[in-house]
Amino acid sequence: MLKAPLDLKSACVLISNDDGVNAPGLKRLVKIATAIAKEVWVVAPEDEQSGTGHSLTLRRPLRIRKIGPRRFAVDGTPTDAVLLAVNRIMKDKRPDLVLSGINQGANVGEDMTYSGTIAAAMEATLFGIPAIALSQYMAGETFVGGGDVNWSASEAYAAEVIKKVVTVDWPRDVLMNVNFPPISANDVTGIEITREGRRKIGDDIREGADPRGRPYYWIGPQQSAPHYAKGTDLDAVQRGAVSVTPLSIDLTHRPTMRALQGMFDGRKRAKKGGKRRKESNK
Image (tube, rainbow, N blue to C red; front, side, top):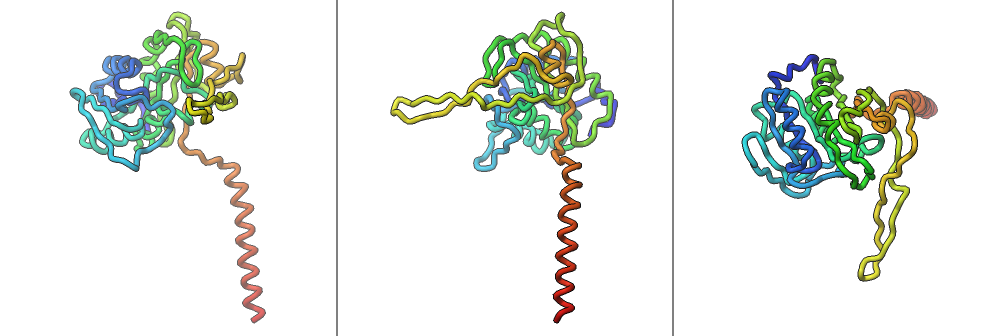
């Protein structure tokens, strides 16, 4: 939970990602964080872990490699990296804020359910540490990557977004998801607070055969649409705005929960009544 405001000038910040410890987006985020925070640590996956979601490594041991002062690589997922950072590497100095990214590619709409970038921020949130995921949309981007990366918008606006969102209280189960449009900083139309959009991957399945004639299937690129629903992250980025979406890791849908409780409470009462009737007939 974030009790605002967070004083970044005295804060200890942990940076992770899913593109790997040597990713260009992480290097940019370190530079940005170093300019606004007192102390910056890096604990990130050894290699790219895009699309791993909130997965945890349980069937093999994990290794930590120290690269330099306050800089470590973990041979696992983004979740592994943050977990080891908090419980082992930084156990004597818990971070005040976790930043994940800057991802090379957007994390909007359903992307966030697959995203290792979001997962790193989610793991921090589970520890009760405020977290922000940051992603840079690429020109001509598809779900499986590709396209040119223009870091201009993220380099220009990331610090401003970070400094502003930590001035308000966040509930314990909330994290921030930030996406930058694939345009130059001078062309950015503004910063918008958005909700999750919709664009499902998986309709385009590529089929082929390997050299031995065995069939294989490859999930094709993310399908784009000319327009997205107003007020969504997809719509904002498409129009050239920076998108800021508060996400909750509490997946409970309370209206349906209440409806189900009423239904099953009724069955429970009927069952008890039937048992009493049987006992009275003995």
